[in-house]
View 1 (tube, rainbow, N blue to C red):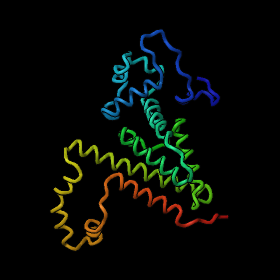
View 2: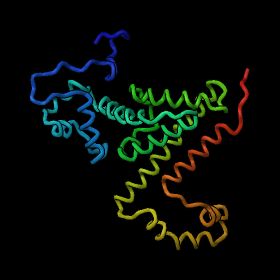
View 3: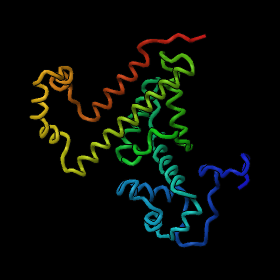
View 4: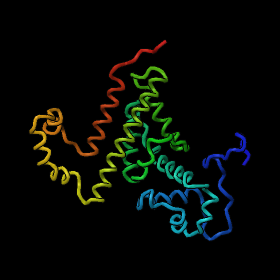
Length: 244
């Protein structure tokens, strides 16, 4: 396809939808992404296939390739559909309230669509809704009192994105482990409690002992909120000076 960029193919978001066929089942990229999301919610990304999507929609598998060229484009559409829901987060006044709203909305949506966390932390997502969420987050952080210049903003965005990807993957991995083993975290902790008690009694791990005995043991939502607050507090704790 000839494009303004030479012979490179246009990204899926910039390609026009194929012309509708005279078929019993109308298709669009949105309906294909919706079906793919439902399958991934039920079976994970490993259980996602063109054949399953086609069956869900009641069409032949080859029809889907008029709309998406490959699995990568399909995942791009699915991810951006999730970002569309994140973009619906309220935009309260103030940089911090805006960041909190977006990040907590991201967690809520990721817990509904666990596969989404598997696709965080690699290459940036560039769909229109992902870019809208990125713009809202970056614009809010750019107003934080501890941010002075583009270098500060890049570091803070990197730290926030790393926290978000790591926290969501950890929480969702624990949920998956509990389902696959039939053992929740409290039961796992109880089973390993005697061993840990014996190890801590040796005196070789005094700091770990303090964390286990004296530290707060929060539920996943409280832990997420606590760590996010610590990160945002760090952004504003030491205003930086602009380098020459």
